[in-house]
Amino acid sequence: MEKSSSKKGGPSKEKGAASKPPAKPTGKTSRLGPPHLVAIGLAVVAVLVLWLLLSGDDGDSGEAESTQAAAPAVQVVSESDLLGAMKGVGYPVYWAGPRTGVEYEVSRPEEGQTFVRYLPKGEEAGSEKPFLTVGSYQQPDALASIRELGQKPGAILVKVAGGGAGYADGAEATSAYLAFPGVETQVEVYDPHPGRALGLIRSGAIVPVS
Image 1 (tube, rainbow, N blue to C red):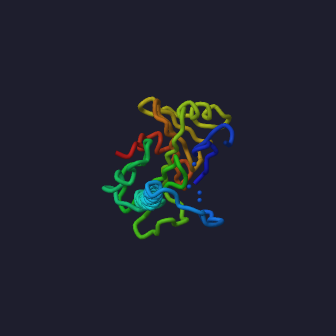
Image 2 (image 1 turned 45 degrees about the vertical axis):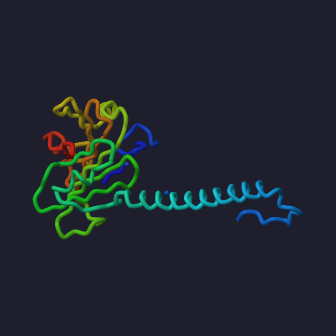
């Protein structure tokens, strides 16, 4: 898949997208002090010990909960489970619509990047074989970036329904890019067949997962 050079992924004009004992006492004191002060001191020590124990438990519990809540880096899901796999992403994620004979490999290699790959049934997750993939990159001003890049010599800039714009480096490019007004997501469509990625963008096949 052609890698982009913006901070989050996708194309950009310039390169800015797949990880952390208490000190021992030096001697004995000569007296413990009046009984009521001793009692207060012992109570304070008990409270501190209890607080430390509880703090340690909370930390472990919180770490366990965070680990349990973390989504898998790569997962293969059916069409019916695809929307659920997007839970907590925080920005719109796009795909090329349903297809027969495939499962959907969802991966998040970095924060702000989500890929949906059309994995033929029987293929292992993480396979290095090239398949249709739609990448969604969280990026402010994504549409303005696409329109500007579309002005490069040899580039192709196309209008898309809904006020969006698509861009590719040329007619035979295997990756093409897409953005819509008011949406802080830049979309990359990759297809190993030259020119097909831009064709999918032109056809309106690239839509949000919903």
